[in-house]
Image (cartoon, rainbow, N blue to C red; front, top):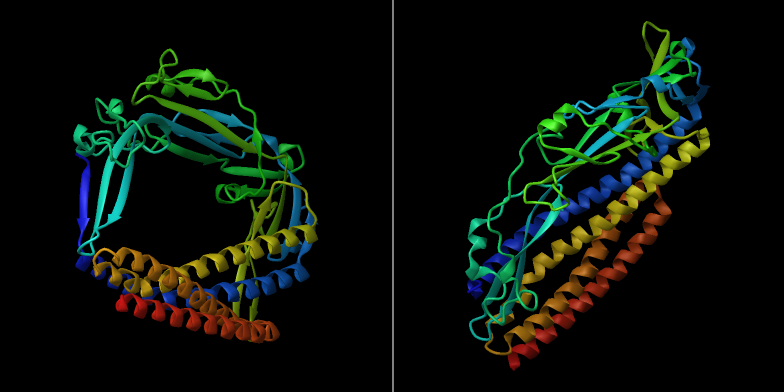
Length: 438
C-alpha cells in the first residue's frame, strides 16, 4: 500500500505556533532589508553620478598620467591571448574568453505524488503518497531512496492512489543510479567552467598590449557571444569511454541506446572581439601597460551613504553615457526585484503569524474543514494588507531621508492599507463568531 502519514490536530496546532515564531522574526528582518535596499539604490546612484563626472575616456591607449584615475576604455581583444583550457579533458579552445563543459548523466528520476485530506473528525490531516520513476538526462547525479523502490509504494497499487491514471507499476528500476562524485569534466557531472587566464587588450599585434584582464575579470564580462566549436577527442575522454557524437559533443552511449550511468559531455564557448571597461587604471608590467580595477566613489553625510566600488566589463563598443545608462538600468531592475521579494517575505511572515486562526476550526467535527478554509482565506487577505502597509511604511520612512515628498505620499498610502487590514480582520472575527454559533 502507499505511504500514509497522519498529522493529528495537536501537531498541526503546534506547527502553526512554530510558524508564528518564524513570522515574528521575519517581520523585522524584512523591514531591515527594505531600508537596506532603498538606501543602496540612492547611494549607488550618487556613486555612479560622481564616477561619471570624474571619468576620463582613455580610448585604448595606456597613459601613465591616468594611473589611479577613473577611466573608460574600449579596446579590440588580442586574439592570441584568448586561450581557454578545460582541466578535465585537457582540451584547449582558442579565440575563446569563457568555456563551459556541460556533463549530464542518464539516470532514474523519482517522482513523488501526494494528496492530503483533512479528517472529518479529530481535526487531523491524512497524507497519502506514492512514487513513480522515469529515466532522464540530468546535470545532477543522484541516488534513489531504496525504501521507495518497494513495489508496495509504487503508484498504481490501489485505485485511489494520488499518482497518474493507470499507475506506473511497469517503471520500477532494477538497480539504483550510478553516482558520480568527481570534480572534473571527465569524472563528474554538472557544469565545469574555465576562463582565459590573461587576456590582452590593444592593437592586433601582440607586442602592443595596452591593458590586461585577469581571469576574475574575464569571468565577469557581460554580453559575450557564442563561439562555434569543432572539438577533437582527447585521450582523457577515450580513457573514460567517450566517443565523439557531434562537433563539440562526446558520449558513452552505445548505438543510440542510453543505459543507466551513461554520460554526455558538451563544450560551449563564449567570445568577443572588443571590450569596453569602466574602473580605475592601475599600472601593469612595470608601467608599460595597465589593468582596470574597481574605482571607489560616492559617500555622503546626508543622506547617510558609504562609498561604492564600481568596475564593469562589456563585450561591445559603447559610449560612456550609454555605459552608465546600462548601470543605472541594471540597478533599477535589481531594486524592483528586491522590493517584490521583500513584500512577499512580509506577506509570508504575517500569514504564518495568523495561520493558527485557520488551523483552529479543524477541531470542529464534520464542518471544521469548511470553516478552516474560510478562515485561511481571511488570514491571507489580512496578511496581504498588513504586508502591504508595513512594506509601504518602511519604504516611505527610508525615502524620508532620500525623497521627502514621495516618502510622505507613501506614508498616507500605508495608513490607507493598514485601515483596510483592520477592516479585513474585523470581518474575519465576525465569521469566526458565526462558526462558533453553528
